[in-house]
Length: 318
Image: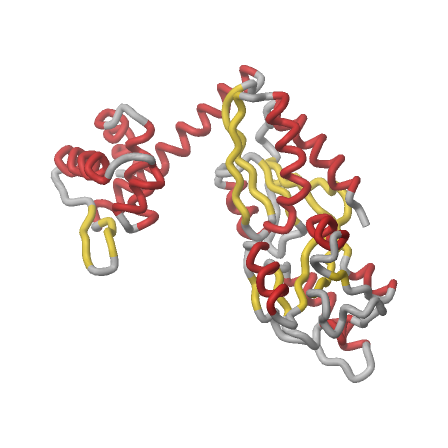
């Protein structure tokens, strides 16, 4: 049924933007927000949905106080539209690959804490070389990035070792990053002395998502410290580093991020890095990995971007 729907949908809709309109409405559940995201008017979006409902002879969306949602018929069509978009995007990608990717789009996934400065520097260089190339970034935890890569929604990802199986993927280590504890000026830990992980984790922690193996490694170290107990989860876990900055700036919480991301603000005195004993500092080092699919080639532009990315990781290595 889904295959028939994809074919029929392609016959009824001759523009990729209309497929995107259908899926965006299903994802947002709000006509106004979907139209704004798509850069079209609500009336245009309503016309697209109305044409599809006429073509299928069934109501595809219903509205209630919670928003706009696909009906049982709509879910079938939305699934088909998403599949069609993936096929079209893959075809576009393969054509770009053949042309050398002087134009086209690269979809990249990354842990939020690795986008700046590593990816931003590499992408800036790629934009100079390939002005026609477009980039789409997704900030997700490594576990989610594995699935995004398998579903071919990203061309590659930058992350740490995930907790989930990685069969069918090639993981290449680019270098090390260091998780850096930091606080606001005037914080009790901002005294320039070394502080143990137990002392640091005695405060509320604000950070991005961490893999379970890394949390277990820190917990084991805490158990070895005299009188220290393994701490529960962080007080705040968020993918947006701007939120981490804001909370640390206004509270006695301790933030964790990569040393590279915060080097400018530490140098200017906006934040203070908390030093840890040497053996514990090494526990905060994580290998940064590049994930690609075994059977999927990258276009030349992506290979050049990856070379810049690896250079950036090595430049900021602890």
